[in-house]
Image (cartoon, rainbow, N blue to C red):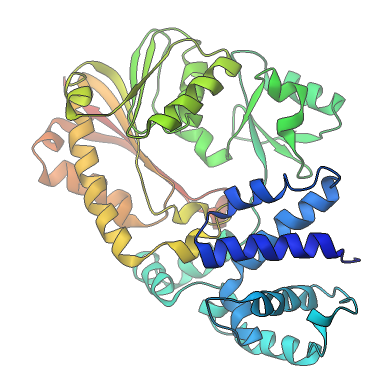
Length: 405
């Protein structure tokens, strides 16, 4: 591979924004890729994948390069040098790469790879938490799986097409995909590509949605004509799936505390041809209280640590803090107790997270059922834990609970 100065410098600028200015990797990459219209798909993927790689392996590379944060420009180049050397890329004759100790880089990599917190490039506290919650054996496999690049999975929008038709349409646009066994609407791309430029996307034939995430809406057991409340709808990936499962019949009330996310949901719903969604911003407690006892189904896609989606959000490893997870666990408990009141007698709700930690998942459900007033009205119907190490997709948890009639 030949390195091009403008692409390497763009990568350095992006890493500076992420590491030193606390910006989110996905947003930084999105902005960076708009810098030069002459960049082709290979150039763009070089920037995106290199940035994500260096973010993912920050601790390991920093240890090998003997640099500490905040990283100045020279330090960022040293991280890049480690990345390139470990990939067998010949470094050009630029001043930034003078005197690269190739043999020492490989030797340090070999010795550090024997220590999990360096090998998997994670903070000490996260490694300790993973072992405490999942046990050494499971955590070892899980964190390794969460460091792999996430595949691109599409969900066929059955309001407009079928999985087979979508596959055929994409093939005409030179995008090859494979159906996933056990997932009703999922297609996996053979190669990464910018699917948002396709006519199929503009026509609303699909959404990009991980395979594990696609199981959540189905877990809720919705039917056409029901009244459903999606309590933490965000930009609406699961809301749109619910609309498709309900064949646009009935009503989905999509609530969120962030109004701008609901604006994005409206835009996506229009493209998807989903007409039964009623977005409502939670600007006071009244919004939720008005819904008490009115819904056939309630989805609580709870805020969580996101430890199940590190493969697509590697910078979360560096942004998360243990005290944030402690606060989050309290918030989750409050959310289940409050939002469960929306379910009418005989109705059902799903509590879901994209975390692999039992403290955010089965222990939350157990606490709700045993230790809260509202929980005494519910019974657990079924639950599903999804580990990345077992499926190759995001780590997820979902529990279906039924309210006594």
